[in-house]
Length: 380
Image (cartoon, rainbow, N blue to C red; front, side, top):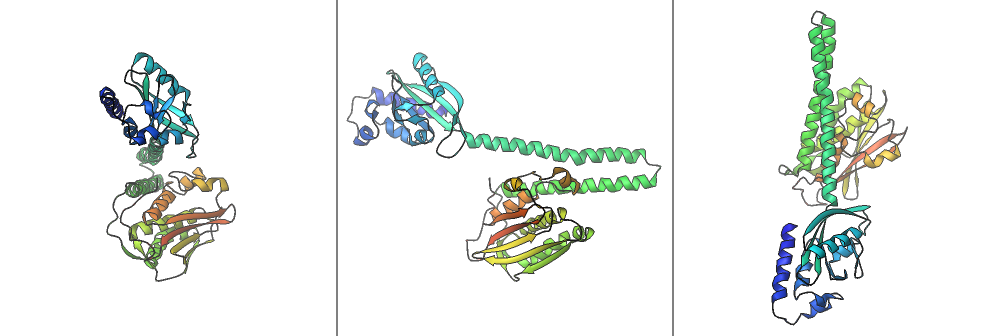
């Protein structure tokens, strides 16, 4: 933004010292009061990416970009944000360039608050002031998500690592008790497996979200995807006497990455098993709806509260944190499913009712219904 201000001020200075030239009709008619601006400056301001406002010596708006009006910074010929107006007056008094960050309540884009990085500079010697405001809302949101992610990863890694350290000390102290050594060694193996799963999920999520190119997309047999995912979950299902039932269409194909699709479906089945009572069943059904192939995973589990449905695909979000950790969940499975679906040109939906189970549906384009996907474009 410093470079932008310097560029605009320089252009205005050059234009201001040039002999008077006829203004173009576009400059003169672009906006009431625009004739008071140096010739051509309106054209310069119109190409700036930031919201731009030029005030005269009486704080009247001579020129405002469409973005400035859309964000609610300007109404008519008035700058309506008090903080910006105060900065403009200070700059006019002492000629010093000022920078600040402000938040503006409400705008036509539906945001509650919009955060701006602001730079205010004098224009020439006639009391004109330039205000540039750059929307920083999305950057702040991304920074907040990144901070939360790092904090969550640190917490999730600390738990199994701390448990392993404690168990190692306990095993060392129980060297003369073979039964205790076996018990604690088993627990160490469980924590090590949990740590491995978490690291692998982080690697997978990073790969998808980072937009890493998909290895040459190819036709993937959905029967293979379904059976590999079911095989990977069969041991866990057997331990709870849960039947895994496959139904629906067979012989279907989609474009994509077989390994990622198996990972996504396995996460859905694992999730269904973890939240289902013993001696129930999980159904994996394939069907075609319009131009989409749907793989639905339905359980007879505890269901999801309505208030949690909107957040269920967030990283590390858990409806029941204690239960999830007890079942070995990393809190990343559904986030991975969402990003795999998006990277294949599809999506994932959920239906659930407390006490009646849940159905997660992975929806993928039918072959020929869409272009072959080339990049992994994660949802942000």
